[in-house]
Image (cartoon, rainbow, N blue to C red; front, side):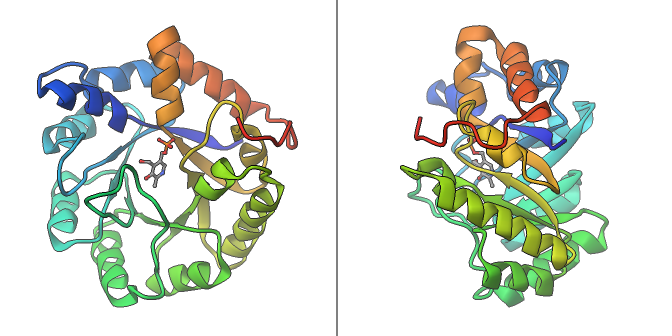
Length: 245
Ligand code: PXP
């Protein structure tokens, strides 16, 4: 069964809308763990639009589960990660103007920078995952960096009008990554409606899900929202109605 990492960025988005102290992602992380979260993911963006350094530091000390820090492969972020020591780092591309992370890393093009970041982090026992589209050339380049994990970008699957072909790409990408010796996570745009076929992919280790869970939490509370997602992942139907939700 794939494990579930909860992305709490949008809890911080609500807080930063008023630049106040509530809601606090550190407090909400406790509720996510009560609902069965296997880990907490936060993206510390260069512009600090949602998650703040303070959040990452406190989460590292208070979580009972694991902290996955999403970040760009910059010198400043690598230094921050080496100081805070999350359980895992996921390297993502970052553009200031984007609403959310739009595409996967172009690993082949950024090989020297990524390889250096991976070496520095993994050299200090912080495993690194690279967020990439499920494409053969990207996965092959991931292996060259030495990263232990990849996170397959599920955005194209989530946005497809008829997602069967995108699901097949994710399945093939997972198989290729495993054959290359990489461990496989996935995420971005997954919802209660579309998660099951991805959760059913053999060898899928963790799904990172944020927006849909925080949205549902407004209605049912975060613990229940996490529990409902956990239930779908625990017992996924491999081919539910593959229509856009
Ligand atoms: N994985 C990565 C690498 C991401 O950048 C994000 C979005 O911050 C997620 C997973 C979670 O995406 P969503 O909020 O759409 O579930």
